[in-house]
Length: 560
Image 1 (spheres, rainbow, N blue to C red):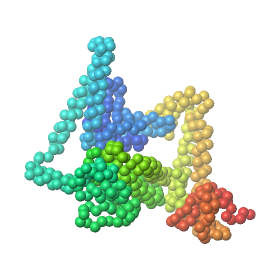
Image 2 (cartoon, rainbow, N blue to C red; image 1 turned 135 degrees about the horizontal axis):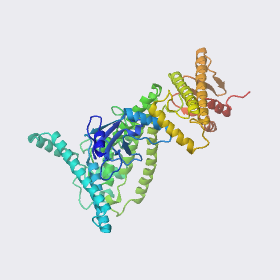
Image 3 (cartoon, one colour; image 1 turned 90 degrees about the vertical axis):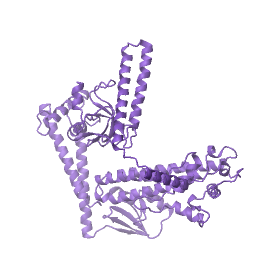
Image 4 (cartoon, one colour; image 1 turned 180 degrees about the horizontal axis):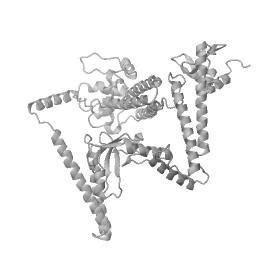
């Protein structure tokens, strides 16, 4: 059985997959199943009795995943509550899902994992041998597992060493030494000024600092002035602190989709709480990595939704990049405002100033959660009801209507076939394998749930009919709006102090006041779902029946 499995378990290129290999799964039915994995166990392993490959998700950088759903099996399996989706996933994965052994991912963590497993098995073998003797079955099994893992680690290290030797270029003597000297000089020039612990506390140091810029930097930290406002040297003119703080608070757009991160502020923040050296441009790189991740999500969402929503996705992405850059600058400025006590020492520590810093940090982290929520908003754009202002609304609604009607007719036909034959085998609308699998699932469900008498109960069919009805009503509403737009009848209403506009182009019910309404009116508008739009200069909400009911509750127009 092991030899057969080894022959069958090959990637799409015909390469045999072994324990410890990194593989890439593509074209799976469920999006979460795609990605990179390392093979944790294979059929025939000393620690594995299964006939499938056990996989553990890993990142492109070689980090072993600790997410909730990080395990998979090959061939892919599907486990969800929807039997139809399970069957569809099984058929899809069988036809289209592929697996490939890859070699461009660092396996250091994977090797460390198997080394840890080796140590665990060796300790377990010693324990069982002490309890039941060296010849006990359990002790021998643990020894076999440890030997297998040790051999796996040695094989992986040998493969990585061979691959590294193949890709390592010939060393060059003179250019390398020259580059090293230049790097050393550059690092000496970029090295941060050393500040004594007494200076952080605002007290005089027993010895004068050898660095000329240290007093200016310490003054900036104590007075909470933006560090980029400091002069780089005494020969350069000083920048006004107010202007620098204003420039840092409002990041200027950088080329592309990024905004500026103050590296000088990040450097001061680092040395306020760390002993080690600051890695140059680390704050900017971390920020850009977050924006790149959000940009990938935005691009994926654009591929799923209508082009009508692309501008909204771009606006949300730009808002995320701007607010995240501002948050980084604010956080670093707050971090640099007061050093940690293990940096400055506990003597005469500014406790009140530290409390102020911690209170500000708590509010910053609350703001960070709001910024991260923008990514969730990007994921949800275009996933709700179809916006009637979308130029492709009619096509999407008609496509949804046809799909629902087709699903209803199919379910009714399958119920009729089951009622007549008590099986789906031989049904012309289903494949032979799918019909057999669905028949087994339906029989199991009917035996377990006595109140269900047919494969697709009446409540499921009723739900489909309601969805069809709502979709037809939305198509009728779209027809009414287009007819009103062509005839010029917008049903706008004037009232004392403003006008009500039913904007069918933007799909918004808008209220425009001649002057700023009082606070009571503004609160009433907000309570009824209206929000102020600076772009349209109006209080508005989506044009729906609920919006009309909310407008009546405001009593802006006298009711008949």
